[in-house]
Length: 299
Image (cartoon, rainbow, N blue to C red; front, top):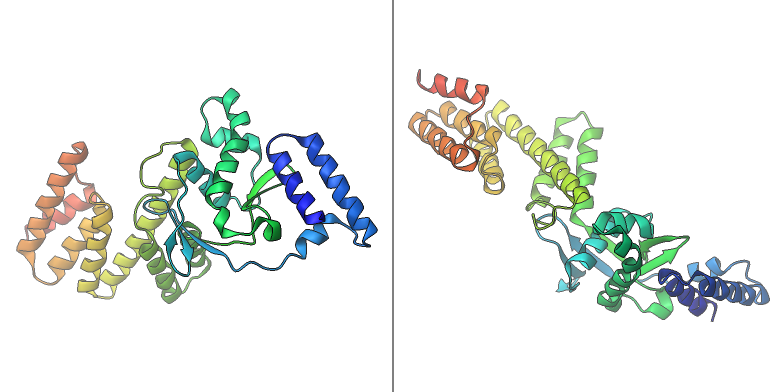
């Protein structure tokens, strides 16, 4: 009974009915006292641990699957999917005002719309949990919306950021290489592709892109330094598949080709890179690339 009232309180709070929510909480606390239990929170915390696992792919296109069978979880609508991503990246929770600022341009409409948006997300993911046992997939506690920790959320973007942190923590090249290889394997495209241009999303997307390029540049340079020419070319070509204008990757290919006496191929690759730069933004190669090209004329 107390757990049921706790769920009612969450729903009412999420809809802005704070007085009714407070009454439900008070009744739940009274039940706990009569049963000799100190708090309603203890009742809720005694719920059995869920085995639900949801995998969320943020790099590339946003996609949800249920683990371990990989069956898709469908969240219809752009805003519910973005809300899920926001909550996933902010596990401590977000206020209604913060969600409104992140997702809506019209601030007057936004605040009243957030509870409806939350309920749409709850409905879409309702199959993950049994609400009477674990509560809703999206909880509302102490003025904050957050994802229910009863679900084990697996996110490629979180794993990507953890690998970045692992690389930053170590000075050992072998450990850096492991972390950076994990990053380039996880990065399958921009965060949520390029469909949304909300300011917070643009910042997130650019941060991930820069970190991914840093990882690739490090791996390519290590391959060049150790004389692993085929590995350097393979890394650079994989880099260029997702970012054809990554000049550092073009430079890696040319350096590796020159080092293995494949000068005609190096010159051909340089011309291909020039054409790509001109087609995209009418750009010119960097000074370093120009110097490298000048060096090829001497070979």
